[in-house]
Amino acid sequence: MTASRYVLRSAAFVAAYLVVFLVCAAFPWFPVPAVAVAAIWLTAQGRFGQRRFDVIMLATTAAVGATLDGASLLMCAVVAILTVVPALFYAMVMDRRLPGYWLGHGDRFRRPRAALVKLAGIAPLTAFTSLVLEGVADTGFDVGPALLRAAALAAVLFLAPLAIRATRTHSDRQGRPTLTVVR
Image 1 (cartoon, one colour):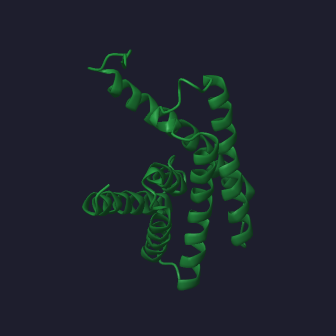
Image 2: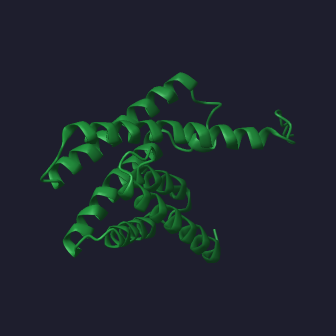
């Protein structure tokens, strides 16, 4: 990826993340958590080998979003940690357990049910990680709404790779033959 494409993709992510972050701050029951957007972004960017820059950008963007929401400097750092750690955990586990799954890579060698079982384990584990970090950082931790947010996060993190994979494999199949013969 060229530097200009990386900058454009990063700017698009920052804008999308800030919109979702501010909407989640205004409407706590918004169905797409900001952590899910960050996790999907880090997973998508993993193939370009710029993970350290993406993590720095994500932490900065989360701190800016918290600042726009009215947080102090220390709270901005806490929000950055609460965003980066689960997102990075999700991206790293996806890269280790299901490399390229969301792009449709390796389907020939992977059983579909085994991949779904792994994905069904990764998403709730990431949501649990986010829930534990939120419980540690928040002094007024309320279990009910936090469990609902964790369930929404797990659902989005489970369904997003399936949706991306379905759209990518459907668009890849149009116009290309399904069988390639190499001589």
